[in-house]
Image 1 (tube, one colour):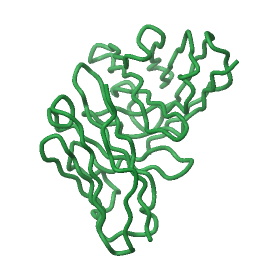
Image 2 (cartoon, rainbow over the protein chains, first blue to last red):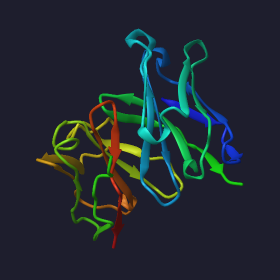
Image 3 (cartoon, chains in turn cyan, purple):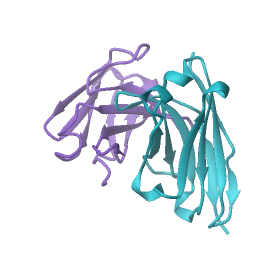
Length: 119
Length: 110
């Protein structure tokens, strides 16, 4: 069974940084493309970005609102996905989910971790 | 990238059918067969119900079906059950390695 467990969320001031982690199990993480999706309270989900498997180049793509501020990385031996978030803004406040990405679809989702950006 | 347009709400009695629309543009829904549908219960993570317009993942009841015509995709839930009451979101690949989600539809089982 696919399991994705996010951690690292919390309260941070505008301009601050935070690193989220996603521990994966139940599938071959190293072969999988992964993505991050966020959801502000009362709103629909918003795609944040994606990282390919190393065998497919390991490259990343990001949504325009986070490009240049957020970085997705992966540690395949540890089966862990990361999201480094810098220069945080109040509008980045949301629940952040990691997902397994396949064929244009967010196949499996973690339970999410809440990030609150506020002074 | 603008969000895909969904009706805010839909409802039906147990056993009835409800269809939710998801309207995009020729740059997203109309351009790719990578439309997905997600079910989300309050306080829970979204769950994939339909991928690639019509494909139903293992474990999803066959009461759920998807279709697409032009720039509009649709999700139909047949034989509504109480547990189908939830928020539903569509999403579409939008080119240039980008994705767009829908505005969401709250389905109420009367």
